[in-house]
Length: 69
Image 1 (cartoon, helix red, strand yellow):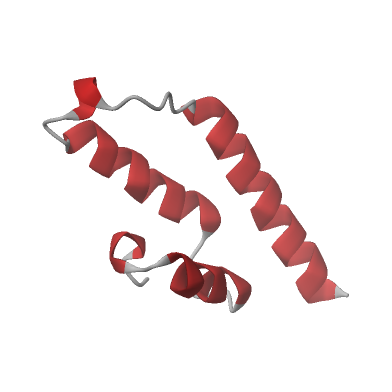
Image 2 (cartoon, helix red, strand yellow; image 1 turned 135 degrees about the vertical axis):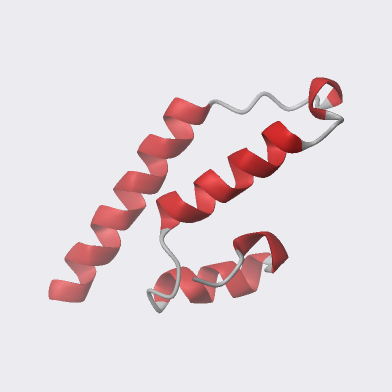
């Protein structure tokens, strides 16, 4: 799997569309990076992992469904 942390938004979108990376796997990579960052306590945006995982799983299901049709 390509490293989603090194991709820009366009590259991520294309990778998702072409099934080169998994939405949940990419999300986990971003959350791991957030947790490892020494400035985590200074990040002003609240990130809700449970909701983000749900959205990523829904995107995965839509992508699989669209691949079947």
